Image (cartoon, rainbow, N blue to C red; front, side, top):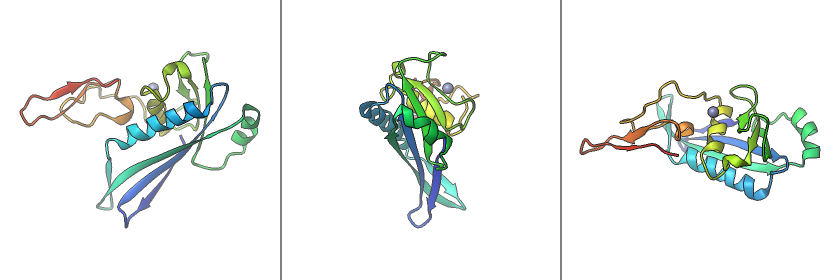
Length: 173
Ligand SMILES: [Zn+2]
């Protein structure tokens, strides 16, 4: 995933900006809107804070989308020089029958399938995480931490520490 991080030290904010450029036979405005809403919601809900040079800064994800005609896609992808752009082909199916990003972590191209309930599950946020360079976790149990890694909510057990000493466990979907 290509993204640009910018620091506003005065506002104590870090903004992560990316644009998902959708193309393919399932690339509709409705699908794109739902996918981007899922990603923005899942990455902003934790209200993450990062400390930079001793300064705690809120992290905001601002992910937008654009739609591209299939015929235009090859030229625009080949000549892209904007680090915010990520090219996602949306189709009913693909050869490995699941959504995936490129050929490795951090790639800015993907092939996602609508049967993964994109925008209404955690798949789009998960694939976005791969694009940002996040691998699947080696640690699989986050109970007691209250901080499951955002992209892997459906895969790891987690819980918030409880004042009463009885943590509420969850397995998010
Ligand atoms: Zn994965």
